[in-house]
Amino acid sequence: MQESSLLFLGTGASAGSPVIGCSCPTCTSKDPKNHRLRTSVLLTLNDKQILIDAGPDIRYQSLRAGLKTLDALFLTHTHYDHIGGVEELRIFNFRKKAKLPCYLSSSSMESFKKLFYYHFSNKSQISNYTAEFDFQVLEEREGSFELFGEKFEYVSYTQGGMDVLGFRVRNLAYITDIKEYPESIFDRLKGVETLIVSAQRFTPTPIQFTFDEAIAFAQRVGAKTTYFTHLSHDIEYSHADTLLRQGMHLAYDGLRIQL
Image (cartoon, helix red, strand yellow):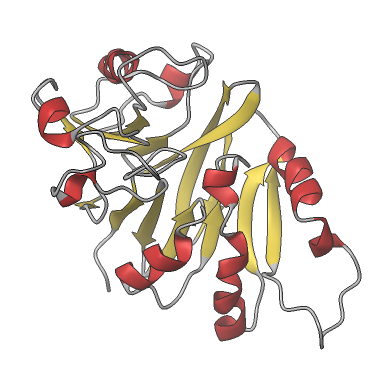
């Protein structure tokens, strides 16, 4: 049986790092921890592989991680950097000869129907080879569900008016693309020992936590260990790492943590 773990497939913001055409210190850095694909993680639980988000880099991320099978997909929301690679997942349909369970919010389901409208029309088996999903819509703003013998909890918050889901399993919580949130989120996160939360940049942004906002949020959660992800090229690893408090770390592509 494999150990239960979380692998950071990508830790970058929507433009990734290096950013096309940019010559800033982060984008020109030789440190691989400054090279960030779009944000996504792979959970391994009870020999099951669960992907959270499938952005435009997911094909390369899967190859780099040696991913051969996939058992479920969780979608936080439907911005391009989180769903732009969903069609790449069709290879797992071919291998398992089954639809891939996909957990998402009702608002994300409505967006998915618009963005990938052809998934919901009559298809010819000869001419259409799209990814196939067994959609599991999470109707409530917060709640829980069972999957593969594990209890998953979820919470809702917003980013630029779009609903986003955060997930908790065991003592780990994954909260990305967060800006506005209800106070009840801290009740859902009580007792979390490992927190993953987005920290896009140092300067203010109307749709993402800044570095300082992410630190303040993490302090309120009170997890023993916090990893910051969804990092823009504003965050240079060696510099930003020195600004963190004890128990807080910058995540980087390829980092694996045990659950």
